Image (tube, rainbow over all chains, first blue to last red; front, side, top):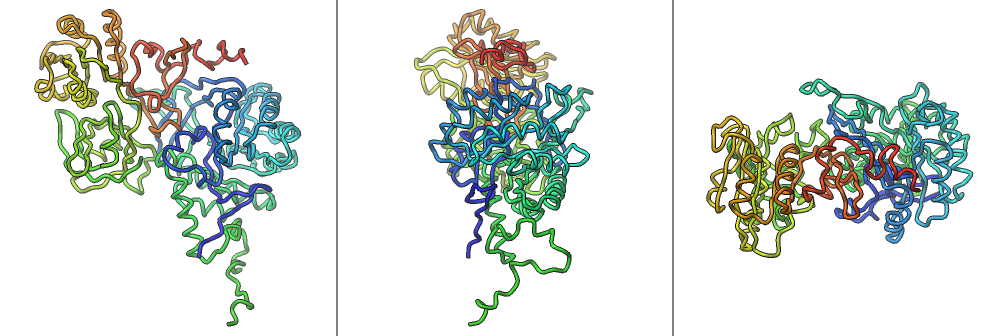
Length: 325
Length: 283
């Protein structure tokens, strides 16, 4: 018997809970050479910016224990080219698309939302709050609840109501629950956790930082426990808010951990660099794990690890009507 | 495409390692210039990025084999060097854009330095099949670091070898020998694969002779399929604008004069989308 893998991201139904992580699948074309993108629950695009961006200098990548550092710097062609070439390509194929946006000012986020509000093919909007806030001495939006909330409120007021607005939070904060709450109060329909924490590596041959940008985002299995912790804490505080769990998911078991912590959608990032088919494999493995544990629906597992110790999972309670022959 | 390949043979070639892997799907789609990416460290490895390897040879034996050439640089390539016959490898390929081949039978000089030379041999086969004349210039730091000298001698009209320590062939770099080879062979085109500095010098020589030059660049890659955006370098497009393009998806082969070698490792101020650059004010 197959497990019902459908999930809801706010009010939008996805056929399965696996999506790509922002910045790890470009705009889909590259992965489409390997498999049919319809097999994803949704595709999350790289973060779209107003102007074209050349990004940071190379080297942009350094492998670290169970992870990697990257400092790409949101390289991309800008919203104009995205609306002209990339979004229509996805829309024509009917691929569920979560568009990630990034900006340096509240006005820039609002303008991006305005440009996307009428564009066909936007399933949801993910607001990348890990960009430096140009109006606030370069402090990252996600570092402060009020700054994050301002962006979310303005994007939410512009975006159509049938398009969920997702706030993507960073783990480099003292209290992620307060940032999460501020975003939800400002109108976020869902939250995505976590963006890359900042890290650094030093090249011991060159005796210099390994990355041209000195610091970079840490991704890969090294950050999975950080993601599980953030999802857990926020789900405990805000149990009704749909969460996208992201960070270091390499296997179905990793995805299952995030689901049990409270995520109803799981995004796959660095695993795609290792294996272009990672999303399909992880979805299969997750379904297998659910089936082996007697789950009929993915939804029954979401946040299940929060139940008090000793209590039986609800889905395993005997249904008397069906059990009588 | 992704295949699980089986290692057929392993051998040392000069200072480098070569693995022959049974990989039917990759072998039949391969064109000279393509590369593959390999997962390293086994299924429970802590190494999350793949290693991009150049293809030295493709044969139709055993349904299709590819021979991969690399040098040990870190723990990932050290693991690869320990593979033995019958071990399996997770390969993705063929990746990248291959070398464009001339329509007419022209004279081509193939320039390779260190193990970059590996990719030139299948290219030479393809050029010879089109009736081109092929001449090699191969170099390295020392005799043991010059890849494929014997094979080059067998297949090319002439082979010029250079070493920096003078232990083999001419003392110096490949670019010291290149001008006279181009002049002697009346070359119509140059193909090169080498470290960036050498490619820059090869391009300068070819431009002096006013002949086209195709270079295969080496850049650190995390994914090899065009999604991670880490292997970019500044390249001038048909419209004259410089863009930060991916070595894996738009390359690894570029027209030499289009690559801004002196700006590799930077974002040129006039590149599309450069910080504070003109493009920012356009939209």
